[in-house]
Length: 174
View 1: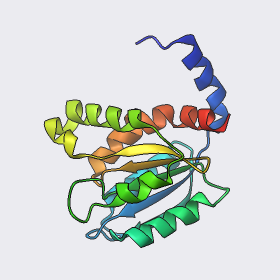
View 2: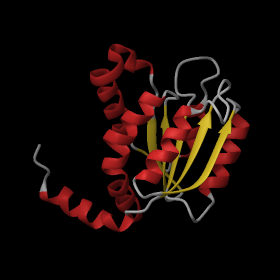
View 3: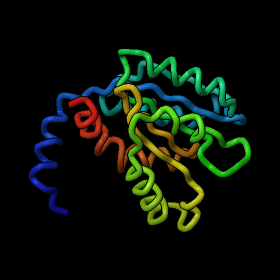
View 4: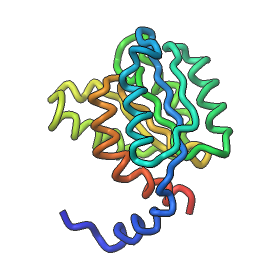
């Protein structure tokens, strides 16, 4: 695939964001710190790529508590990226998107569209339609909401976030 010159220039300029300062929030009624494979994977993948994980938490599917944590993190000056994993499905307790979406200054619908396309092609087939993964900007930060499965988090990190996170942050902050 040939990348247009403008995109290459933006990516080159985005190298100033080579170290993203990130926080990871797992939203789950069934996971504990010991069994949270998705949150652990996200933290380890960020660290392995040279990024700084400056916040991490695990909360139940409790809208007020999730909202309070996200508002706290959005108010911090030492964060560039917040990744939330869990609560993006259609289950009655899956309410993460209802918390995250109103926090966006700008939603990036292409994130969810691309994630679902890749998920369809590489992982779960038509079940990809059940995901409500999304991303956007919120108070000068990137805010990403992913499904709770480790495989979904790996797909999003490897194919989207690591590939375009710095570029998206560059666009957000220019």
